[in-house]
Image (cartoon, rainbow, N blue to C red; front, side, top):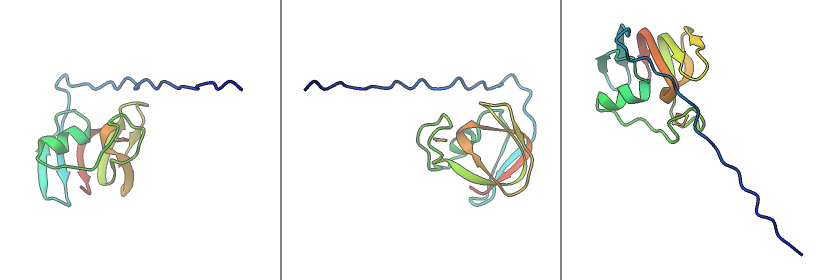
Length: 106
Ligand code: FES
């Protein structure tokens, strides 16, 4: 009996981040009380730059371990371009880029 090894290769998605200086607004991490100017980077990076250590894994929108609740504000999904402006919505910090002021429960 022969055995076949089945392998799969996953390629990380291209995450397009516009850091050209067009970012505006204030990013507030309400659980920790930290606040920072929106740099246009994904919220996971902005949280880390603010000294926070949010739980995360893949950093590419696959594992959902970075999921937090966005209390208010609007974010853009860096993979799909989709905007989320609803209050109290779960978002993935690693692929969510703030569009203006946002308040994250982190
Ligand atoms: S770290 Fe895996 S989805 Fe964000």
